[in-house]
Length: 202
Image (cartoon, rainbow, N blue to C red; front, side):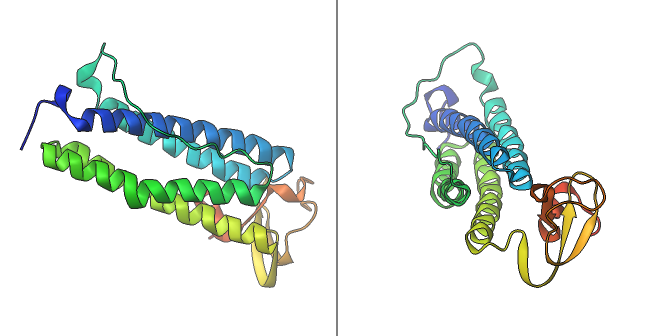
């Protein structure tokens, strides 16, 4: 049964989601800074790429609260602390948080919004949950590659792209230095992952 938005649980869930997405954006930005310190520039770029999408999610949730402009919404919630200097740990923790949003939090929020009669909000929760699943899979795959040392090396012939100049290298390992622009290995990305940059050679 439809209820007044100001009296709804959906209003609070939207604010929780807005806060969560805003914090995720910052956590991913912090993770990117740590990875850059370690010379892992392309994985840092993927964190920043994901952070921008989290900003987009936050904006969507915030806009759905626009009818309450000028008011304050009070909510309680717990939010993760993902800090680590270890790249694999950063990726695993990020994947875990994305999984929770996909598998539990946002579907539940969507169900509540649907029950309360806010179908546009429900749709936003369900759709963004699916996007978080993509984030989870990407972070998990990257964590596996970091763990197995297959991000810059491969047991078979593979391709890597220098994100500074676009040079594509073929072999069993990315070069230590790009032969074209002389940027270090950390600027190379497995070509399969370069799709997120809009790579047309993938």
